[in-house]
Image 1: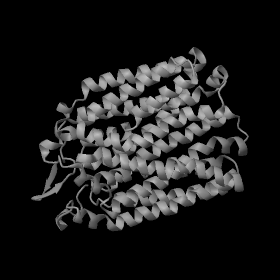
Image 2: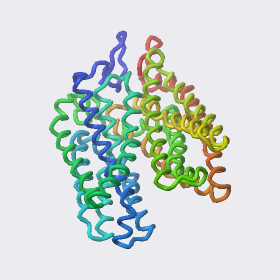
Image 3: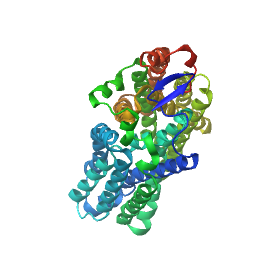
Image 4: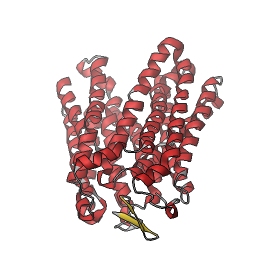
Length: 441
């Protein structure tokens, strides 16, 4: 699909006027966001029932950890190949199948009679959830104007934070009143209902040429070997991957260790520390949405301002978090840390929008899978782990005082990306003449 402006064609971007109505586009977003919540509800409900499983099956902590880790492992291994398959086979069909698989597997967890059966159920949950985030956001962006990419990306990615908090809190309440099996059962039923509604309301035919299944009709169906190199064919898109992943490093380190920080330095009981840490998780989600909205608003006339927003958020988080963890314990420290938390992942929306701008729409889900891998390899996996290693040598507070320095590298990556952005757009044929310099990409 091409965007025509001033007699010049800019290939492989979303249409200026989507093929669906605005009302239907928001319905697609709502259903997609709902399935994302279901994804994280099914993933995180396990954490709420750890004590009950440990007591009933006499499990070790390593066994409990493996039940959680297997989902993350399968997501990491399968995100890219399943996203590529969805781009070629059809994104909507892939989403419905994925949601059905993880929901049925979650119901299977509710019926588990042993650790082995639960492990198998969680394994299948991971397979189902592997590509949902990347494929889901590709479908959402395909039905909205390009000028809303950062806002929608930030809002969609923030669903993970909201779903994680809800998964633990709702799962804990259900488990307390009805037992741990019902906690899994409720999440599984919720996902199946949403998958059925999504399959009835959102179809490839109704989305028209917006999804991967109909790319051939618009002339974008090219051999995979010619499209995949475009995932890394520019300096700016690689910088977007790196900058996003490094900022995610900080966010995940904070989310993982905030309960311990509050317990050790504020003497909060575990339950209170967990609830307070949940507030910081919600702040992270709000920051993702706010960063996307600010990026889209400021870049309406000059597209490169998306990079400026990302750079500002990176260095803003550096200043606020460094200052916050240097302050004495008290309300002021928590407020400053909260402000830094708000900014540290506000780069998610702008980064996702820039990846969408710099890669072919025919492999949009695969591009977002690549971004997800970067976030995982640079952020989700090493962030909590390296923070723990530093804490063993210099104390948790000392580690949290050092971790914000990663934003220096994150901000530098975004700054380099901004320098190459226009040049890369021209080289890729996305900004062919000076008249399109300020095109809303």
